[in-house]
Length: 195
Image 1: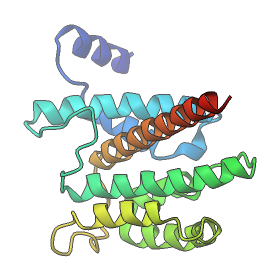
Image 2: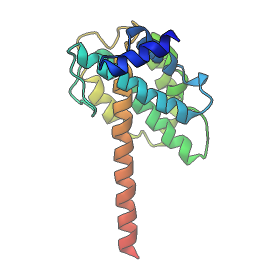
Image 3: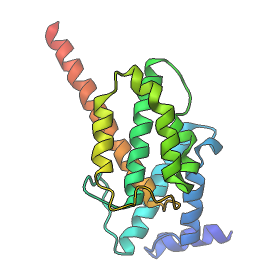
């Protein structure tokens, strides 16, 4: 009952969700394996990102709905890297008709706790996929662009990530999905022209 009361108060007082509830949402969503259905997890991920966006805005930390390709926050950048790894593997799995979570999604909890070491593990597990895509130059270019934004030794910082990493993850995912949709649409247009 206490949670419901807090939710109702935040809705009608136009204030953000209490920090404890926001942290609970964050801790739940970084454990995608605990969800029965991937669509439910994706929905909760977007809701959690909205909650934290509101908190960041109220605390004077500018955050937008679209990907900020110049943002240099360590946590945001790590989120972007995770989304790139997820996207690459998801594409290979789709071509193989394999229906399983990606390494990035499976290791999301570990990634939030120890991003630097977990990123190394993710890249090791992606190596066969990268090889099967002849080095996938687009992937390496995107990774390099994100890596160039880390300041000083922040990339090697293995401290736990804040919810800002979910924003980077979600926004990079959305950008990649839109790019894929545009590419598919352009292929359909080309095929229609050939007929």
